[in-house]
Amino acid sequence: MNKKILFLSFAMTLPLTAFAVSGEGHGEGWHHHGHGIEQLSKVLELTQDQQAKLEGIFNQQHEKIQALHKESQTAIKQVLTTEQLARWEELRQHHGEKHGK
Image 1 (spheres, rainbow, N blue to C red):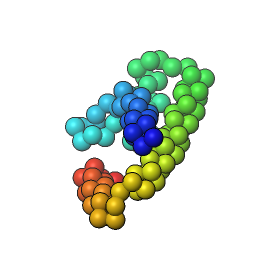
Image 2: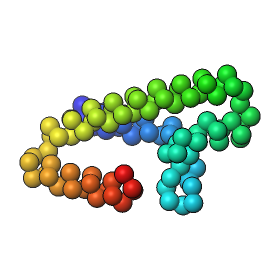
Image 3: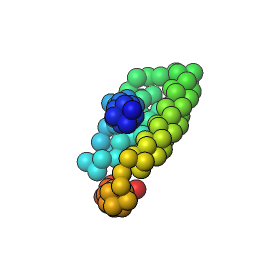
């Protein structure tokens, strides 16, 4: 069950990374700055209707990913021991600091 959740969590992030064009090599893709629709509109020559529909899709996807992430974190915490959980939190904090979160 936990492997399935982790796999789904990874699989759900793949569509985002497909469009995540690096910005200045800092790992900051267009979706981090809210420029996704603007960038896609220029490249794909989207109509206003297409832009609105894609924005809705991306917002729904973002909400689903956040919910899945929260569910995965809860499941992971149930598996780890107290010591492992403390180390896990340290790793997550270090990762967040490293990536400016």
